[in-house]
Image 1 (cartoon, one colour):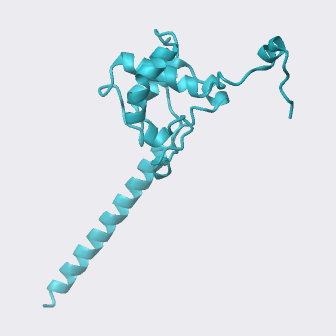
Image 2: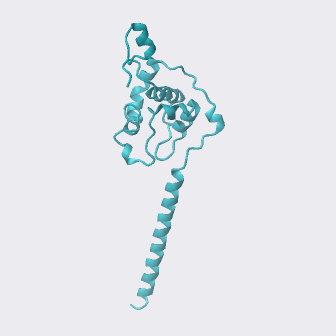
Image 3: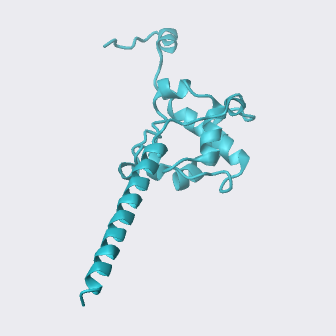
Length: 163
């Protein structure tokens, strides 16, 4: 039994070292996954071949609800029922400042390639579906069309109370 104890101690030390290595790799992997997106310049320059319309946005809505809304929310605010499960948090597409800072090509690249925790949709969706989704995502940052603006109110002879 005396020879079994040193072998058992060696096995425990080996398993402990292996556990430390696995933890270190997991930490490094997590850090690397939370780095900023790197989008190639040619991808940024791509233009959406489709023109935004209510018909296009409505046609892609069921797909968005199926594939995206659980994380990004029904109105694209990044508040879907699964959003709290992920780090980094899902993007808020209703943030007009953020959406005006990215091109359609960048959105298309990110949607196509994915990055943990977001999956790649290159093989799951057609190119046309991805471009349609981008039109829908952009619409989340637009002000609602049923709220009158100052110009249309002036034309109607009404006024909008100022805060």
